[in-house]
Amino acid sequence: MSWSGVYSFVKRIPRGRVVTYGQVARALKLPGGARTAGRAMFACPSGRGIPWHRVIGAQGRILIREPQASLQRKLLESEGTQFAGLRVDMAAHEWKPARKKKKSGRKKRSHKR
Image (cartoon, rainbow, N blue to C red; front, side, top):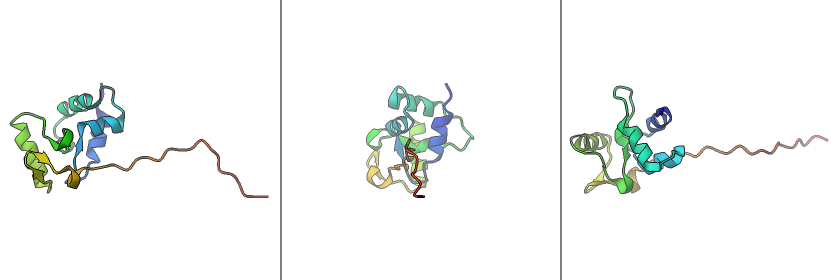
């Protein structure tokens, strides 16, 4: 399976902002939900500029194991992301991408007579 759509989405997350695995899954309509997003992030290739560290667990938790968990926290903190204990302050740092406008099937009427 190609994860290119997931990686393109993650590249759009601004510095100092985070999204959850579930948000990635919902935005991209991934079958399998947050777990599928997690698999994609686990397979994230290095050296391609994909900010994997900006994807976290529900309620702002870092879900990966050490030593990557410490690295993820350091990378987030270096971008100005604040933590409340072990969780990211989601109220301050959650990224909500703009939704694409749906195209209506209606044609515009001409006002010519």
